[in-house]
Image 1: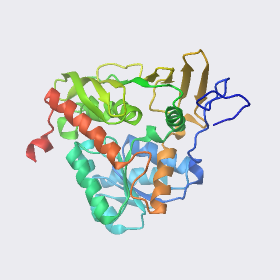
Image 2 (image 1 turned 90 degrees about the vertical axis):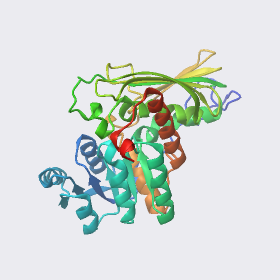
Image 3 (image 1 turned 180 degrees about the horizontal axis):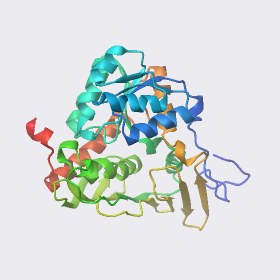
Length: 358
């Protein structure tokens, strides 16, 4: 933490100062050669950010459409463009793989990567359900391979500062963490968020952010009370959840496909609050306000478009070091969040076709 002559019992200066983020500059992380599965919007962001803000490079891409793969490769200067995941993995010359497909395909693609003895980073939500996640982590453990959920928000500098604030105890006992993520999407049966076969619904795409945030702050969520509404296709359109945190305090989370919410996150303690301005899951502002009136803010230190660089750099550091998981987004945290989403879907009666077949 930044030091000044006078400090309170928590180690903060009497004129409140926030700690500096501990995460290294993403540009200093080792560079890896990445293969990308499914060249959509999120893969485009991942690739552009990696090339702009890290030493890693995307050198191969696979798609079910050879034409789409070639278009993506040409745009980003990737040497390899493949019409299938199998072809990309067989070609080799990559150090790690990033899975950017719809949720319903995460499990099969990530398993194929692990069976090819390559580390993998998988977009959130990690899988359709907790059993799929557990199977992937067990396989990774047997093969001694790195796996990480690409919950990019957890790697951002303001999250690092918030974790230090929480560890310091300056907020006192945590009473509640509240977060929401809602966006408006026109009702369209062809859109992936309304499609059950693609793992659609608010929870896996939007709700995973506030749920992961809440789990980070108060631990595993237990005794959940769940309310919700279904969309015309049977996926979850609105979910509200109130739960108890394993480390104390409550979590209050909401997500919807039907409206844009403030998309903020607030941690409320007996001695103060910490607020992440909307959207809380992207580079932005952390404001800490204590009960005695002192307040301090932390602003994202770099360009707002570089947010994904921190997760890319973390994966590169861990893979180079031979680690199997990242302490920032470890396997247990991913499974915990998946179990909470499983419980919410079960309460609302949402089952995906792949789960019915299984």
